[in-house]
Image 1 (cartoon, rainbow, N blue to C red):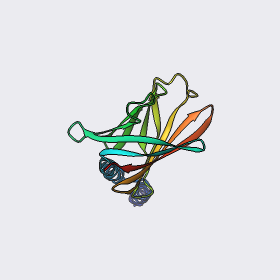
Image 2: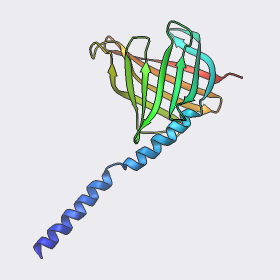
Image 3: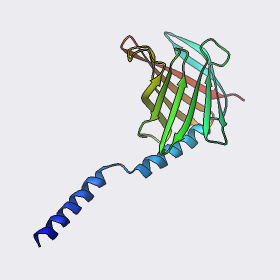
Image 4: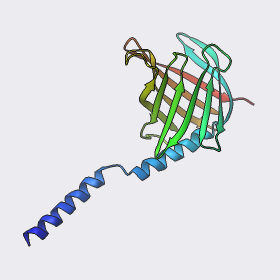
Length: 173
């Protein structure tokens, strides 16, 4: 009888502990829905970016490639600062690899969603990073305001300081 009570108690506590862990299926569903949301950005965009106290012209484009399994983003196409970011699913995670003008390739994992119209990514790791202190991107957040307007907040770490640059884009007509 004691053994049965012990087994029941263990099962109850295990069930309570598991209830506290976020479901990987739920995260996978959120990641897939967020990936679809990002794919809706396919097309050409123009706008402005904060550069110190000034606003500078900016362009970006998104293209769904590889049979719909990858979203390719090209920021500042044709300029010396052109950067490419590739978004894709990896199991239940939404990942992004950013090919940076800083000559390294930070990889990001989608952060837990807090708003249905925001897709945020956090630093996971990087290739070609000479040291953890080397300048590199550490995150990006996309805020989809409507079908023709979105914001991008790119966060760059240099000299121990994180700085975020906001891009305000409208779909080209």
